[in-house]
Image 1 (cartoon, rainbow, N blue to C red):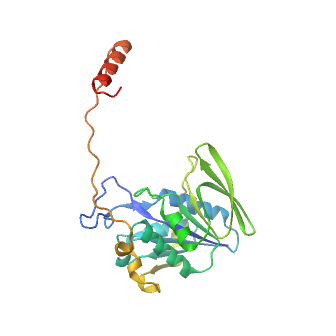
Image 2: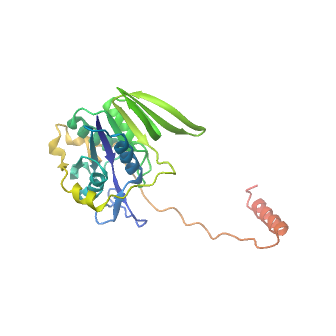
Image 3: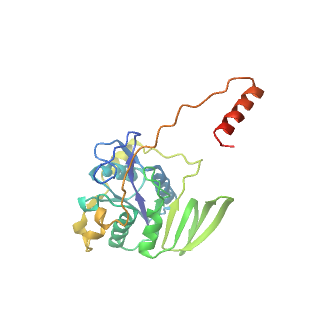
Length: 261
């Protein structure tokens, strides 16, 4: 089995800066981490791995995204590929999916693609399904656990508003994992971190693809952010510290006055 895990490096800070010209996140020089949803997806792949299987972690980002891929290698991935080129910059979810799907086609045969449900910096939850669409393969989303792989079929437990479903799909398939509340991310041991440096980590640029570069990055994006701005600061709240009956009456009077009720 060959498992491909799509991961992303995301800002580890609340002080996110926006490029005023492109309206995209400024990532250079910002402390970053491996997207938590993606780490869950990677650990699910590691859980399913048997002797002879291969796990390839793949990410699109600036050179500093190698740090996230090194963590993937330390956690148990066998190989990592960074897609890094100025031509990839400013991509929306569509262009990002095209870039990742193009790289996956270049990798060759695969059985399962694992992806986190969403990235904590964008929260779109679109890239995984778009990759499946680009590759023409089935997808299972909101996966809490991959239960088993038998032959050419995969069975997974998916979360719903009413509980969960057991879903089966034919391989190859894309899995978009939602991190369960019980999940505790692993921290690689020092020996694993040192061993990760000996594993292959390649960097691919637009020159490695036999595709028109206009399909990638800002130029290949179908959507464009017009404006990014912080939400307005809420006015100071009102605290009613009277006796309960009086506080409730005052609250209702205030809500009636503001035409809320």
